Length: 285
Image (cartoon, rainbow, N blue to C red):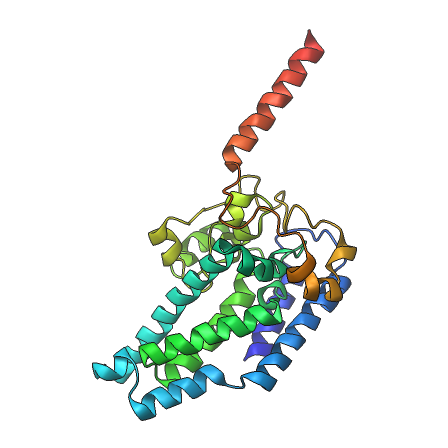
């Protein structure tokens, strides 16, 4: 399933890309796939099938809310998918809000382009922290194994889809983003502008951003002209696999965590237009 979704999105990117790539795809994919391989190896060695094993134990020993209240199986599966998605949204907020965690998460954001591989490019330590949060959530909720397996499939599938450099018709995007995070919606989150970076945190479902006030419909410069990544990491040679692995420990975190809000993107555009008008007036006078 994972490989099939990856191939479909990668092929879609070739046939109908949304944006022109700014750096070599070969170099980016080497770095991104290298981190993905290390993430998979880390999980297989340290926590193989961890969330599913916790769900099995929760069922056996009757842990968690869903077991305590004897929730019917179909409803328990649905509740698992929805509640875990909310927890992932809150976790994502936390990785932006806490400067120490942001140092890990900026490995994901430092990509100079965004495509199917970006959706799975996370520092191995962030992957481990995320799994421990998920394990605790599964135990507290009392999630059934089927619900956890379905959630993992949906999470990985939507992460590849909504990071894809793919073009969707505008009408289709408007309808889809009522139910699922679309590439155009999530791409805003990868803008170099701080307020745009700190928006659209959802991975699967778009509702949490709307409910919590973190939703931003479009990037101020448009999808083709917006810059992707972090403003202080613009050189590809500083984003090699080795650099990405040590980035949380020696890299510059910039001003992207919630301790600094950044300028309003619309104010920046107005300021830029005023500057252009002033320059034009000077030329004419």
